[in-house]
Amino acid sequence: MKTIIEPFRIKTTEPIKLRTRDERAEALKAAMNNVFLLDAEDCSIDLLTDSGTGAMSTRQWAAMMMGDESYAGSRSWKTFEKTVREITGIKHVLPTHQGRAAEAILAATLLRKGDIVPNNSHFDTTRANIEFQGAIALNLLCADGLDTEKEAHFKGNMDIDKLKTCLEEHGSEKIPFCMVTVTNNTGGGQPVSMENIRQIKQVVSAYDIPLVIDACRFAENAYFIHENEPGYGDKSLLEIAREMFSYGDAATMSCKKDGMSNIGGFLICNDDKWAEQFRNLLILREGFPTYGGLAGRDLEAIAIGLMEALEYDYQVYRHATVTYLYDRLIELGVPVVRPAGGHAVFLDAGKFLPHVPSDQYPGIGIVNSLYIEGGVRGVEIGSVMFAQKDENGDEIPSPLELVRLAFPRRVYTQSHFDYLIEIITEAWQHREQIPGYRITYQPEFLRHFTCHFEEI
Ligand code: F0G
Image (cartoon, rainbow, N blue to C red; front, top):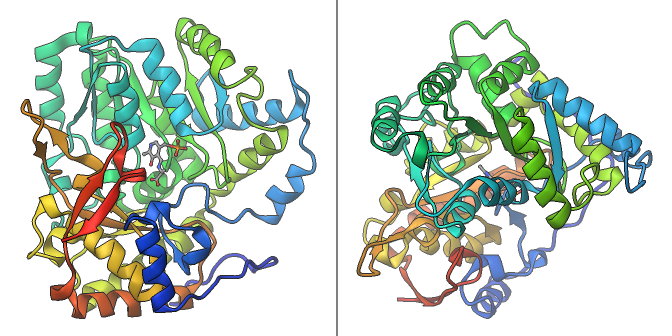
């Protein structure tokens, strides 16, 4: 059978508001040209993020009714802990309210000023949590990962030679842990191969440096390994995930992604001393270690969601939705990051708008134009989000200027994507009229969420 269908049917619906073009232009103006500041009701197709925006299954909703809301030692906690251990094999499990809370505890416990944390690519909250401790978040993505046009299977891989050089230079004194992010969200949602994870572990082990996996999209990564890495075609996604985690000494997780839930996260580790330190901070910041900022019903929904994300038919369907949009954009000649990522299609804004330089944020031009054209909300992943500062305080642009169209899990159907293709086609045909933007207000950290833009 050629047609891949959604492996579910729809039981509950949520209306989408359809605004006029003038209403959208007005809304964007009121949001200071930053789509993060729009009311969600003013967006028809919301592809801002795949985080916490998914639809839960009937099993998850039913499990929520079974939530045990006891403060300590609840039954829901036991279910959660057992599931996380079953998938990861990691000893200590600490629930958190979302991924960045796990990152904050990890960073605050282990990092000192001047420390270095290598990663294939740090996500923005990971970077911000590391930098907040005065440490340095270092990206060591392989060269293929920076080439948006190259067709290769595992463009999220870390550059092992760069990692070796970094360790030779700084050693374990300066590097309390190394990270690897699966899949590599900021670099196009590209996967990391098992071989690469294994090599990273081998290299850091020689220096006694622990490896921490940013596991947000672990199930999507497992699917890519199953499809494209020799030796894994016969293994279940659960077996692949287990092997991935076997190379980790710890992991941070946002259950808002491959936990298929609207909230939640965890921090896990094997080391008893780390666990004790993490737990102390967890109690201070998140809550008692058997709920960690979550309701018992959330723990139930996540326990089921983590396993549903590992169902093969679900991943086949999920990947088919991403490639459906991706293939049509390729046919149209729209510049996109190749190949299709796990959770999103990434437009190459630099190539889409060659007349808009990095310091005029081409990604913002495209994001705002897709919103005005069709009420589609995407997100810039480029210099607004990731520019660094040189010693004079001038901006060093991000190596890639991208626009991410992230797919909420089990939410939109094929006709939503057909509509989206029409809107992108419209923007592509009128690309020469799309302007650049300047920033008129920005906060110190994570500026993309709240900064204001003005059209140039
Ligand atoms: N790590 C990665 C790779 C992520 O993509 C995210 C979140 C986090 C950590 C933090 O998790 O949101 O639960 O605190 N990414 C979302 C996104 C926000 O839109 O890509 P969180």
